[in-house]
View 1: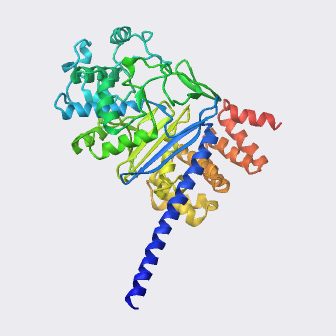
View 2: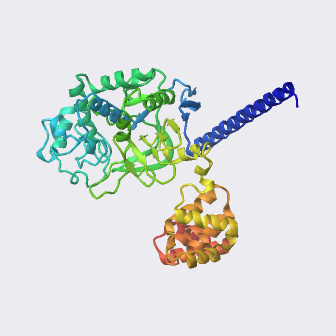
View 3: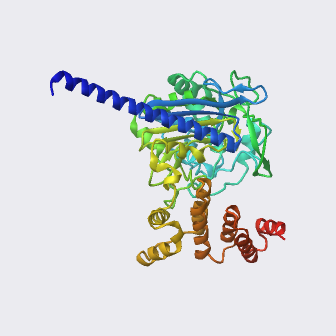
Length: 494
C-alpha cells in the first residue's frame, strides 16, 4: 500500500475511534439523565444538581427539575442548595490548613487551645473531635434543635453541664458540640472568624462565586426552596411521603456543623483544587485527613452500613471494592470521592429525605460497570459467588446449587437479611422470577423466620400465585402473630 493511501486509512481509523468514543460518552450521559429523572420521580425530588469529575476534569454538569415548585423556577447552574453537614469536610480542610501553617497538630488535646472546658474534656484530641469519637455530650436536643434558644453562651453553658456519652475513642457518635469547639479553635488561631477563614482560604481560593454561609433566615440570590417528606417525632425521623416546605435556622456559632450554601459547580471547583493540592500543599495532609479513624479497640464506626467510617471531617465508605470519601448533608445532599477510580460525584437536592448517598454508587456504575447493582455490586463475597453459580446453573435450581456450594465450601454462610435484600433488588430490576427463587431459598434456609415467609408471600402475590401467597402469609403470621403486614393481607382475603 502506498503512503498516501496508508495515511488516509490511518486518518479514517482515528476519526472512527474518536467518533465511537463520542457516541459512548453521549450514550452514557443520556443514560445518567434517564436514571436521575427516574430517581427524582420515584423519590419526589423537586430539584437536583449533578456534577461528575473524571480523571481530574469536569465530565458532566447538569441541572434537573425545579428550584421552586411554588413559582415554577427551574433549577439552573447558579441555583444554590444547602449542603448541611457536608460543611464538616470544609472544617476538616481548614484544620489541616492550620496544621500545615504550624499553628496546631490534630493529635493535640483541645485543652491546648480552649480553656473553659470541664476537666473530663481536657484530654480529648482534635482528631477525635473531627472524627466524632470524642464522647462529648451533644449541644442539640433529640429533635435536632440547638440548645439554649440559639444563644451561643446559653448553649455552651448548658452542654458543659451534661455528662460525657462515653470515654474518648470508645465509640463513634455523631456530635455537633465538637464542631462548635473546632470553630472556636479556628477563630482563635487564625485571628479571624472561622466563616471568614474558610471563605478566604477555600471559597475564594477555588473561585466558588456562589458559595456562602447561610440559612433560611438569610436573603440568598438564586437559592432554592427547601422541601421535606420528613418530620421529627420525639427524636425519630418519620417519612410520611407528603411534600411540604422546610425551614432551617443555623446560628452563626453553629455553622461549622452545618451552614454552607453551594452549587455542584462550585463544589467541583473545590474538589479539583483539593486534588491539585491548591488547598492543602502536602499529600501527607490529604492522606491524614482521608484516613478512617480507628476506635480504641481497632474497629471503625460510622452512620450505617454504607457510610460505615469517619475520617477528619469526612464520612467514609470502607469496603474492598471502590472505597469512597462521602460527605453527606441533611438527608438531601452528598458527595462521593472514589480515590482509586479518579472519579467524584456530587448530587445536591432541595428535598430532605432524598438521601442521594444511597444512589450515587449507581451513577458511578455508568463509568465503572462492575459498580452497577444489576451486576452484583454491594453483595457480600459469598452472595456474589452464589449469584455467579445461579447465573450459570439457573435460579430455578437455587436450592440444589446452594447445597452443592455448601458441600464443597463448609464455611460458606449467608444471612437471612442479605438474601432478603437481594431479593428486593431483583424485584426493582424487574427480575421477579429470579427474585421468587431467592425468596424461596430464604424460606428453606431460615424456616423459623416470619419475615422470610412474608417476603415470599409478597412476591407470590406479585406474580399472581395468590393461593401460595396466602399459605406463606399464614405461616409468617403463625411465627409472628404481631406481623401486621401479613394480618392485613389475610384479612382482605377472607
